[in-house]
Length: 428
Ligand SMILES: *Cc1c(COP(=O)(O)O)cnc(C)c1O
Image (cartoon, rainbow, N blue to C red; front, side, top):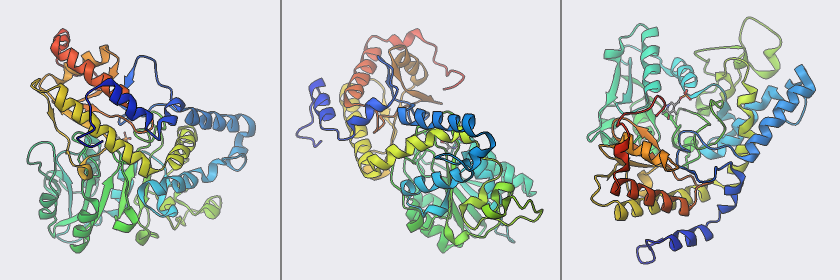
């Protein structure tokens, strides 16, 4: 899609759809007629394969009762490990460095409890001021549990412009007081990708443990966590991985740390063959499985089976290529069609710094989002002035992107957004 061939026309959008090698997956998703869903970075749509695997596990409960732990095509007892293996290629990890378990927030509690080892003056946690609140609350409560004042011991790297965090500023904050760093891989508002390789390298030079929250990158961009030597990571599976509301999350622990005891232990932290010995001394698994806590939520894990099959089949290379192309396409349309309407593209423009969504800023953002919804386009609003638009590689068409930008233009020209209050809803 170079500058010469780009055309501002519906025909051109249709041509891009005809050339899209991932187009066959669109029919596998439950897309509503007349609705353009651009919120797959918040909650991915249901696919037929995810639905099928969910129903299969419901059947295994019906058919086997307690024996479902060991019977059927997907015995529940090692399903977390099996799914970890399926996720490993998405993040460039070894099979046993990954486990599907818990949620982003609980996994983060677990890994901070495991990796935060204050030692003398090295007793601070470094994060950033743009991260998602749950991550920050986790760090604050972990500090409190250890008797530290989060006001002093939680450092947050400042953003220069309210959108991006500069890697140079993060590195400058890596002092000898920092024990552990937690950062997002992709910022949830601006969609900026942080240079995880460089940051890991710089942290390790200074003897600091570093982990990333992959919520907005897993299934959207490629990662090489093992090669980069990242210490740990956490994520959810309901955004780009389309595994359903509250789907069980995941975590990664670098193999160098295998054998480190879980900060928050439970019986599922156990070596599998020892678990039912019921001893009061834990023999922890010697892989990422050690950081599980209790009985896995099988039914909230089941959709992942079908969903991950699609990722395996489609391949992250193809998915990332389409995502880059369709977000570039959307930015071109926005720049051309919405010129002089008060919009600013707040996400990084470069391919290597741009995640899977577009972040549009406008002072009327809250009510523009409401008007978009009233017109059948589902964006999401992020306070104070952001509109996130995520064209998803597996199921969004170029035609839908074309139509959504045309609708947005009309909403602005007709001032339709003025019919709504400029205030966010309960779930924005
Ligand atoms: C979506 C998201 C979460 C959500 O955490 P849950 O424990 O799944 O509710 C946390 N952090 C980030 C950065 C997110 O994007």
